[in-house]
Image 1: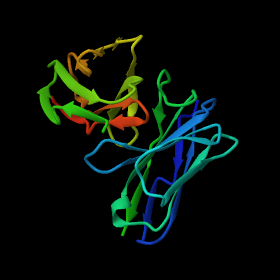
Image 2 (image 1 turned 60 degrees about the vertical axis):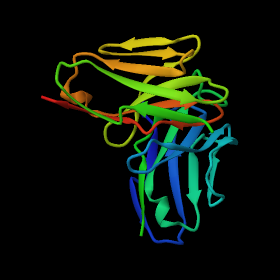
Image 3 (image 1 turned 135 degrees about the vertical axis):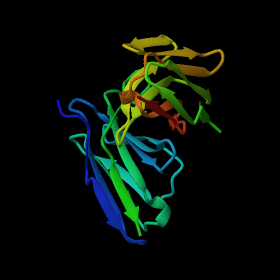
Image 4 (image 1 turned 120 degrees about the horizontal axis):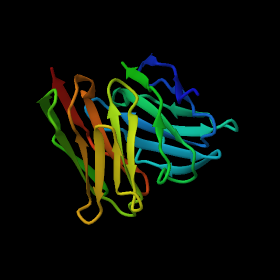
Length: 116
Length: 108
């Protein structure tokens, strides 16, 4: 079975632009979470979606938004990009509702975003 | 504020050594603790520990959750060069909070 997939793999953007990152969960998984990982740090939680509804939001500005589609795939959008948005963006999926407690969460390969 | 602290931040050992990685946490509404191995990009799931499952083992890796001490350890026995990676601890409460990771280097 295919794991979590993300696209694109790499992306270079200019300050002020916006970006859309995409994620497809493991087949059968209804929950998708997004994380930002800056070099040298652990992943930082951005959003969680389950059944197209937002179930959790981390401490990120409103420039960050996301949505989940009927097929459970998800998009992360970032507007008005700043240099500090340069990071690895990870998507993870699991099968349960709410938080991943009790469910093993699996990560995709990530999208490396560079803002110049 | 919820926080997860891992120690040590980095560790260098030789093949065959046994290592213990530590994770301590202070969170409200603890639900589970997860360990991941990150080599290049995607963190790979290792273990999930909850109140009903405080000890897990898989091959040379094992992990224990101490809810009284609010901590967990990840043990790796008979280390191999392929164990070289960053090991991440995450705690799920109201959200998922990760530690900064422990960078393990295993030398031949």
